[in-house]
Image (cartoon, helix red, strand yellow):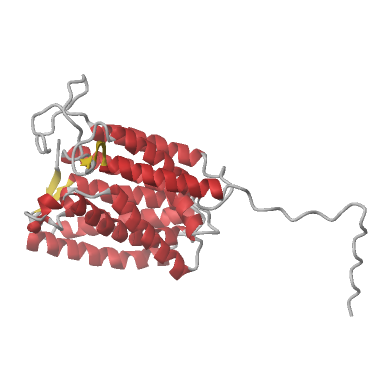
Length: 330
């Protein structure tokens, strides 16, 4: 496992042009993606405008790394950023331009990122309060992992609802566009969990069992639950992509995602250890994660069932009834 991918700093002044070039290259890549996805053309003027924030970001990174460094880049946090980048790129590439533009997808991702981190941390800490009440100094250490997907999804939905309200857009249409990207991002995040050694499973002695020295059960062979999650969520993302035009109403694709995610989560909980893998008080045969999955599946499935009927189509004029003559213009 590799919880720390790389250590940055201290940097010499000669590194500043390299950092600026990398940031500027990422900005040009995004502009090129916008052009490919039907947005504005990449002109010299737009490129030069992108160079200004690239220089500012490069100088800021140089200052931060040398002032606070060396800075250790965590595997889990890096994969979280890549997950949001992949989800945003998916929305920008396959999203309906009538609903949201590629540039607006980036704005939505920023809203969702903030909401997801807050919601995910709050729920995770609440589920493992016995530990964090004794280690209050680690309450905000999100770079170590320890985020609840259910809490993150709730926080992201609240942020998305705020975004839709402020931008006067259909919240349900946006959730459909985002659903495959959410599943893809979840899969990438689980790679971070694998590298970090967290979110693994219970002890087992199967041929593919693994040991995570930095996990809760060091040097004990356990289920690589992170790999199960990665493969399952990647499959879910592919299914959602294939079905993205098959549902009758806005919001149904997202509700379907909640249903199949809940099925996956219910099953994988049998192998999972950690905060959500704890038995439910008063119902030891099931975990807290399984109870949450049952509730989400039931609610999402019921809403889909009650709203499944397609919108009524206006009836055509009767064949036997003469059509009214158009009025003559004055």
